[in-house]
Amino acid sequence: MSFLLNPYMVAPASPTDPYWDDVVLLLHMEGSDEGTTFTDSSDSAHTVTAVGHANTESSISKFGSTSLQGDGSGDWPSITDHADFDLGISSGLFTIEGFFRVSNPSGTNVLLSKGGGVAGWNGTTGNQYQLFTESNTLYWQFWNGSGVATLAAGIAGLGWSANTWYHMAVACDGTDTEAYFNGTRWGSYSSSSYGLPTAATKVRLMGSVSNHSTNGYADDFRITKGTARYTGATLTIPTATFPDA
Image 1 (cartoon, one colour):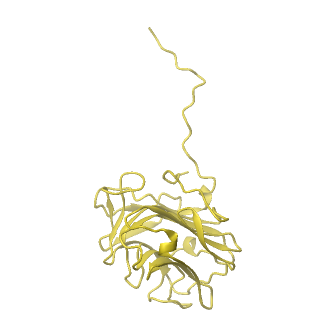
Image 2 (cartoon, rainbow, N blue to C red; image 1 turned 30 degrees about the horizontal axis):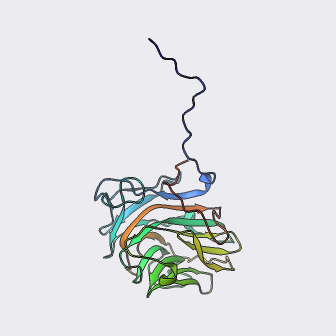
Image 3 (cartoon, rainbow, N blue to C red; image 1 turned 90 degrees about the horizontal axis):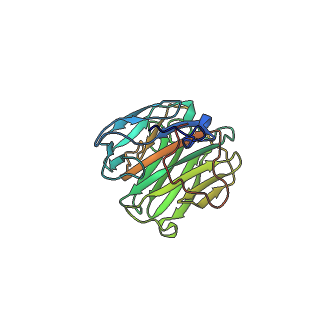
């Protein structure tokens, strides 16, 4: 007895990203348990360096088998300065997003930073942008060329609990910057005027040049430059790992 395959049966297509060409960083945090290799799955293939005790952890993950783990004592993945990360310049569109799980949301947790050799804000060696918590408040801050622009929201009002996965996103449509916590917009800034420090800077995930870092986990992190994926009051939280194509 023989069986013939139905010629009209087609395997389900893998999920695709309509904005793939604009993805400049994609970290799935996949690796071995306690591994220190972080692979950029975007076409840019940026080199990511583990600093301190930053590692991939198999006991906790949002998607896949591992996530990024930091113990809050000066550990983070670091990425060398590149034009891909000069976000918002000349009203440029962008989207930053990822999943985070922290042990103490009310404390100081740097989720993402781009900064130079000194802490603080200035037009030379200071920060360009940061997403962080401090004193029961979640902040998105960026250098606008002459000072610091700030979005802020109270942790309690967001309903943020410890040791729970949440989706975070910041999107700029060329006019407004919108910040989202787990699907709901918590802040909006009516200017998209971002400035750029003149000195070389680095992108740090779950850490900053001031040695602030996060005790917790991150998974599936993506930067899209040239597209604002989210606008309006709400967004649909991704339910699967970000597509690779």
